Length: 71
Image 1 (cartoon, rainbow, N blue to C red):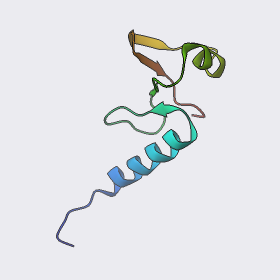
Image 2: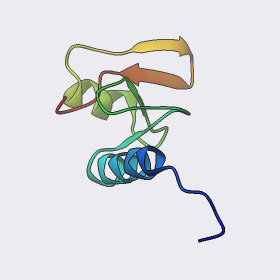
Image 3: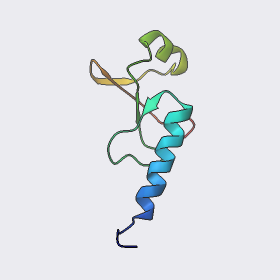
């Protein structure tokens, strides 16, 4: 009871944990349900191309951004 709680942040965290456990993605800071996610580096470009046939944005060579799967 002495620590403040932000339930919106707790729900955001749960959404992120569930999504990242199901899909091979990471969520950026301040991510919210339905926003773009990051393809984890462990996924090769070939595997990512199969999973995301519409492609992805790569603002940096190691950063591949796609719309949230299933959103």
